Length: 68
Ligand SMILES: [Zn+2]
Figure (cartoon, rainbow, N blue to C red):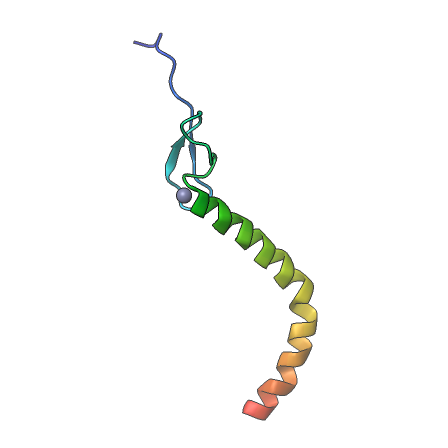
C-alpha cells in the first residue's frame, strides 16, 4: 500500500486545520480565504503595534495618572 502517493497535508497557520496541498485548496496553506485574511491582519497589527509601542506607552503613562 506504500506505493500510493500520499497527499501532502499542511496545517492552516491560523486555525490549525489540515489542508490538502493541491489545486482543491486555492487558499493553501490556509484552509479558507477568511483564515488567510486573518493571518494578514495579524501581521499588519503586529508590525503596527511594534512601531507604535513606544509612543503609545508615553501617552499611556499620563493617562494612567489622571485615571488613578
Ligand atoms: Zn484555517
